[in-house]
Image (cartoon, rainbow, N blue to C red; front, side, top):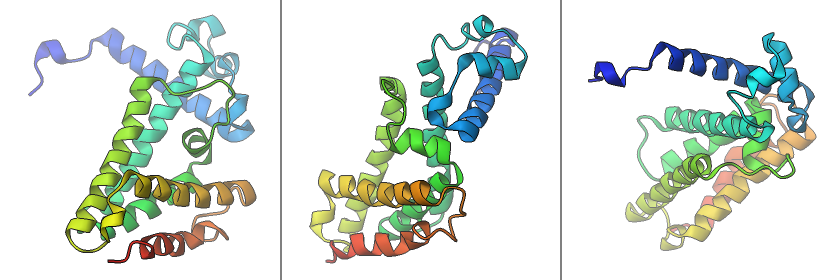
Length: 208
């Protein structure tokens, strides 16, 4: 149970609300004009405030990118957890989770580019934000380990290289779809609709 002292203050709530609104406008901007088109001044203009006022919340353009990266990781994580809820651990969860990652990316192309590509020269997520992305890979590794333990996959799947190749497969589908058919829904995309086939091919390489 939260104690009175742990509740956010009015100033903290106001700050969080301003930052959330700024990120909403930033996301709309990069969705409309491209990930590299982010401008703190334009975000401030859309909010009806002066640029210097926004720097009180985000000290740099890269700080906005960092917050967008964090939002993307959180949204992708939520999509995966919703997809795997109630499923048997191991291969069933891997299939559903992998499919959810690609679907989320197709539906959120700007954030997906920030997560899966390097579209902004000089930008790297902060260590704290990037750590949350690494945690998600650890969860994937745990699913591979569980799949091997249950006899669903061969021992070769329980390795860092298997997880790395898994990300290559999913990112490859995402990249092909976003690069060649931006705006096309997941189920209709020439590449995204092949997600299940790509996952099957990967898993077949680790047949027990």
